[in-house]
Image (cartoon, rainbow, N blue to C red; front, side, top):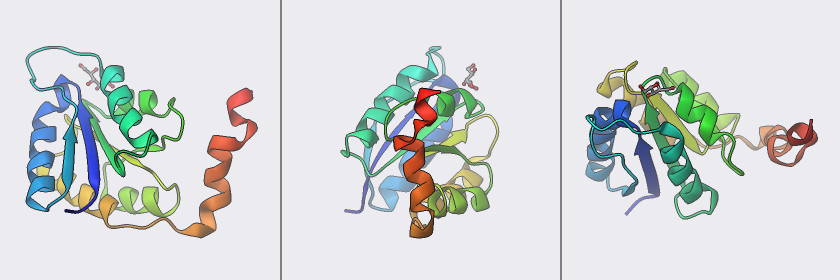
Length: 150
Ligand code: RB5
């Protein structure tokens, strides 16, 4: 079994979540599916950002995946949580750089913006790219610096 991945979405991300879970399971990742489980029932994306952010922040999951319609609302929500660095990626290059430069621990996708196959390529890139330590000081400043006390 590979890394544990927590995944969550709102109703607008449900179809893409289903495709990504299938990909993850076929590739032997352990998946924690935190919902939502239908595209019919309208739900609020911050609730799912919170569920996934908690699993990643407490170390139970190595990475998280969050999906809403655009990816914007759910990434804004997740980035308010401690230890979370959520990156909205719509190109594979962004996933590479989000891991390499920002040590992003949650990949965010827009379920109404990108096609499932492209989302899988982005996810592969995210999962297979390591953080480059030369960016450590910058990443530490996100959490520890006085940026939170302005
Ligand atoms: C839900 O309709 C939609 O607003 C949400 O999925 C997301 O796109 C918000 O940023």
